[in-house]
Length: 422
Ligand code: LLP
Image (cartoon, protein in one colour):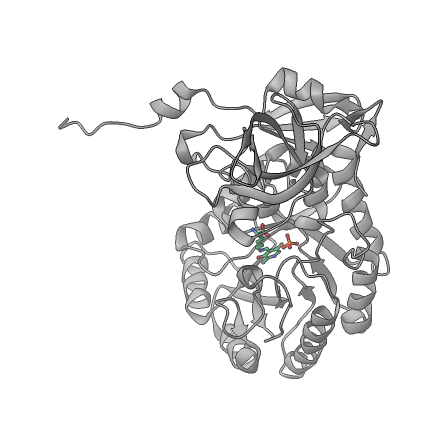
């Protein structure tokens, strides 16, 4: 459930008509709903309410705006970060280091040092070389790095190949068959303290079975590691639970059902449970608002050319992803609908959001919204074609604020410098 609904014929974010935001901030613009972000976070809290010992570490990569992080942090969220940049955002949003886990296959020594100095809950370590580097860094600054090893369970997450991470051919984690050996090595290293086990098998999972398999393997591994003498007290189960991108009856499982799978598979181990949801919290809490620039007659098809493009929302071009595209002004039932290929102004055929979309009306200047754009939208945007980074707005009931302004052309151009020999 989200808080983007039509009221008096206009699509609103909570109580704010999107027409008002378009007027005041311009388009394209991402708009997020406080109530939806809050609700989604609470749904995960409920899903894990069977154990008081849990931390929901929001995956910052999904939407890393500092206002969004502060909102979630203030609700009690921890954070899962994958770079020192994300770590800095989380800290700037007021999240304490002991609620931040550091994931990612390629942490640099500098990143390790800064996180250790700043305070960190745990590093999710993905390889032996990384383990050795972390040990060296920790020793050099006289700190101890709490770690979980990310284990690759070789489970098919049955999702898009670009976002599946739990198969042995993927670059992620330590093969489960070698996990005991690497834990034994970790236990001998100075500056390293083993606290748990970590897994993340992929994103946009629409089936609970892969989770059941992976977490079952994690439970077996935990027992084996304990019998080897390791104090495994924390399980990081990753993120990845999918969201409905289409408003039909094929919705992915609910967080509450996911929470039950966790309980059934690892609930009896007495470990603290961490999860890292990103998309499920932010995805349906945001829309991308855009204006129709032209309606163009093509050969056998009509194009709707928007002021949003692939640089603003790259998911359709990158993953063939679907986002519902809806008019902001509600049209009377029975209004004639036409079929459009919805495209942006970028000079690539790949800058196509969707083909054959049935939309009513659609004149130049009309507003449309891409639903489910709160996760992996703004964070993946770029300035390709020298288009300004798309701004972000946060709505809270009947008020809204710009939480990332659109840069001016001047700001964009003055960031660059000519070599002094020119
Ligand atoms: N934890 C780790 C270690 C991850 O790598 C990810 C996502 C998450 C948690 C959060 O997964 P989520 O709950 O959001 O599914 N850009 C792609 C998605 C990439 C996901 C990468 N890792 C997209 O737009 O679909």
